[in-house]
Structure formats: structure tokens, C-alpha cells
Amino acid sequence: MRILVIEDEKRLAATLVDILENNGYSADSVHDGEEGLELAKSGIYDASSWT
Image (cartoon, rainbow, N blue to C red; front, side, top):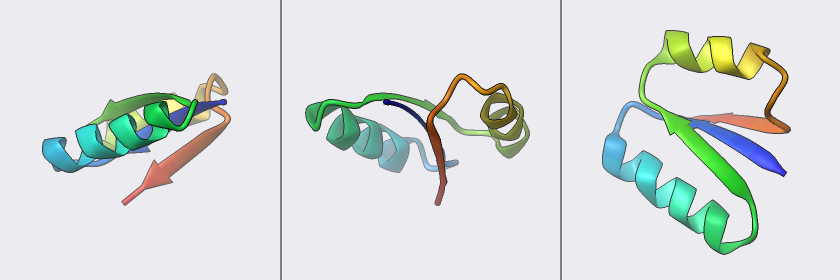
């Protein structure tokens, strides 16, 4: 499963990605809402998380 984390706090985003990857998921993060929305709409992710 590929997950997109959209979070403007870089340390929090990195922590979330680490937790997801340690649990067997593929995760990417972006720190800008507009970029995150475009990526979320792209269809390449199975799930997106806004925090």
C-alpha cells in the first residue's frame, strides 16, 4: 500500500513516514497543501492523510 502524508511540520511528517514504513507501508510526504492535493488526485496513492 502506498500512502501520502501531507503535513507542514517536517519533523512530524518524517516521524509518520518512519512509522508507516516500519509497519510495511510505502509512504511519501509533502509539506505543501497544494502539492499534496495534486498528488492525492493523481491516483498513485492508496491513501492520503492530512494532519
